[in-house]
Image (cartoon, rainbow, N blue to C red; front, side, top):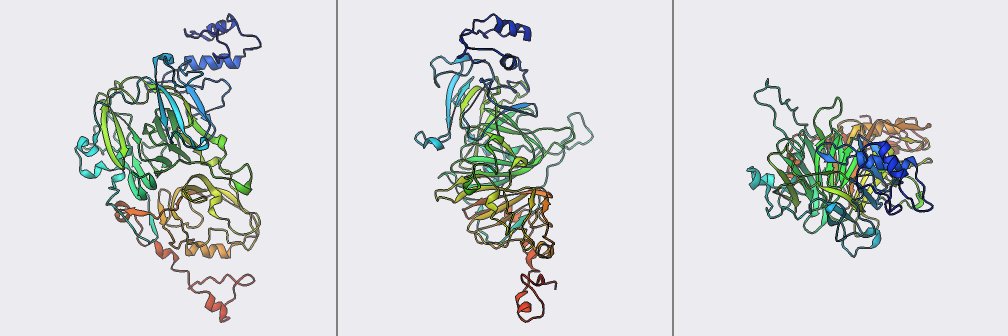
Length: 561
């Protein structure tokens, strides 16, 4: 119940039961014109009585306003609305009212602002959040960051996020490329299983990431990087608890195998395959596996990292005011906090800083996920790709793939994206009977990296498999393979068809991408990829010489030789 609406209501001592809570309300002297309903009563009771989970508090905490819309999933509660000014508190009355930085903070907390943009950025682009935490971020920094390889005792390559030295490990290659799935790590052996004297090694998120390609420079805040991950152990488990933050840019996670439990300083998110999650620059987080009933304890997926700006919804233009990714379907965490160092982590708590693509680590005596309340416009979020409202042609021709853009990060050139996140979802194709329905052959000023979450991609049914990837760099020719082309020109397109065989996505960028040593030499690279177009022969000469019909009123003209 809003205390500024009813300042006489005292909830400083927690009621021990619903009945006691109702008595608290019934005996309070309410201001004139203010009514109380069971919605407010049980909303307040839920806030003060929510059980702790995983040594944390307020995992299902609700925002202080009882009328704020909420979504409940996987045992967690989320706020809704892309780019909204959200507010939430894990303990009642800990979010300051009427000011951001009071001298005396409720709950004896510390105030800290996290700025995701310059102070003087335009209001529409200004991103910031006020955090009210048990200890501020500066607490414990007397123990300095050290390079990760010095701390871990490993080889120098472990110093770099994704195993990539940004200054020397990236190379230009204009050829079309395709990769099979990144191998999944082996199954872990249960703690009480002694049958295997040499159990497989564990791999946590930040150790498993491999940089595939990138462009620009994180230090100058320009460009982007594309990574893949495959791990089988949690950052927030075992003998140590490890958290990290990215000083270089924003992460966009696309899980392909295994659901993720991403614990951030602003709350927790469970992210399933077919969902995405964005972790903004500077937000502290850990990546863990959300164990489902019959799932294996392993995860694999893709990451898009942008070094400049933030993701936003694309403009709709002539589409109108609705369609594509609707703002109300984006979910934001509610406040949740941990106190002190976990007793299950005798090795302490470690914080990793990704800084100019190098990893630095320091030890601290408390969890950085100690934010009890927060409000602002700069926080992690997730989105379910199954809720995307696809727009398509219902007359003729295959429209540009930009109509499937979920999120965009714009460059300094108007209308040109530093990065677009585009999906090719299940959809109905209802063009006329002379439309080539798969994506057309193309050369592009943009670079296109594609991945497949499940099923098949309608332009390449063979070779491009779930967990795999492809790259068609700036002005590199690409398009449907020969078999897909042959099927498409011979297909009966007189009726609408529903494509529901898979979910592919694309990271598209105006940057020319350099490939990492790993991407160029890994065993899952398909070196014979370009042979998929070898069957596309010269059909025009046969048509011109009259040996075979073709064109709009003739045969397909496909070369079957």
